[in-house]
Amino acid sequence: MQASATPNAHPQLDAAISHLADLIAYDTTSAYSNLELIHHMENFFTGLGANVTVLPDESGEKANLVARLGPADVAGIVLSGHTDVVPANPKSWQSDPFKMEQRGSRLFGRGTCDMKGFAACVMAAAPAFTSGELQRPLYFCFSHDEEVGCLGAPAIARYLAELKVPPSLAIIGEPSEMKLINGQKGKIAMRVTMRGEGGHSSFSPQHVNAVEYASRIITMIAERSRRYEQEGPFDLDFTVPHATTLTTMIEGGVATNVTPDTCSFIFELRSIDQEAAATDIQALINDIEAALLPEMQRQSADSAIEWQELFAYPAMGDATDSKMFKELEPILPKRGGKVSYGSEGGVFEIDGGIPSVILGPGSIRQAHKPDEFIEIDQLSQCLAFFDELNTWMER
Ligand SMILES: [Zn+2]
Picture 1: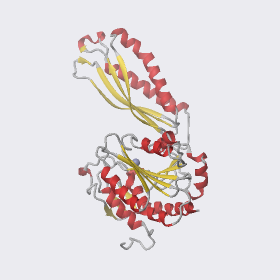
Picture 2 (picture 1 turned 120 degrees about the vertical axis):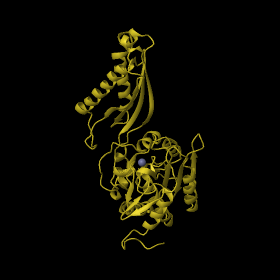
Picture 3 (picture 1 turned 135 degrees about the vertical axis):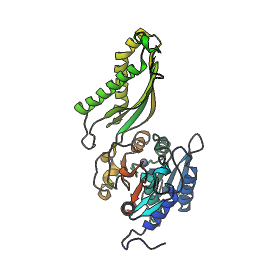
Picture 4 (picture 1 turned 90 degrees about the vertical axis):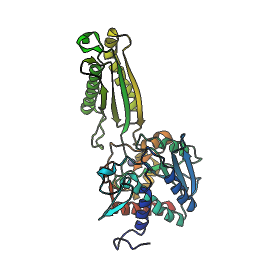
């Protein structure tokens, strides 16, 4: 092992940095296969004597991995991360996004903070978890396709739920600067397609203008969001302490002199509570259809509003009342509030019945950007937490 950068560095820090360099070198942008990375991890955890399960997806191009250390017959703890990363355009980067580079106290590369830094710490700490006698199991879980809508995690959550004794707490290592996050908003993204009736724009009163009707729906969505802002429900642990809904993309029209017969747009709803999102979306759809459809169809019977759910992931927030959380709380960092970005925590809660928290190295501010980096000190903090977790697991 090389000499550490600083005399007081964590003993596993060099190992974590070297694992991180290995992980960054796999281009696991969500559009590509993650199998090479999964096999790399499979070999690693198998070498440690872990019980390893690879869960391939239907295409055979992607897979999740679950590795267990410790006894299977008592409830344990999940350490979970995703293997995929968002795309990186090399032209906007100072260095190759898939070749880790250290500059000063920072490690640069796509996925350094979101979230291969966490995976590297897990791999660096894993040998220490085998050295003593774990009284409960640790499940290391790594998913595919988190960045495109948490597509891999449900299979992991279901696999864990079907174990004879499922784990009773999941720690999701998304970048939280090693603060404990005990809540996360859920999200539903919808595509809406307006079907109207077009023609030469000089005859517009005889048409059903899809762009104009879309704009009326978009206004209703914006009004719904203002109502959330004014009336709640509120949860002051979130920076934006209520649900939000907004239109994010729109497409419509073919020429300056044609009444548009189609228009499609995308909107999202971020909710603070598990069940509210689906109910709220349905109520919004009902209101919109009642307000606009009869008018559209009076002009043209074929007019329609089509609703398509693009993806959805549930909110997270069940952990703090759970038994395992209360037992573990003395070694956990202080509660650092709730976040509005997505994670797989809600999936573990809804699909697996496993209460979840977010706790991981790096800052979400560096995620999804060119020149993504992680502070080396964040890796040290994560390793120090794993030391405490190891001592606790052996008790
Ligand atoms: Zn992430």
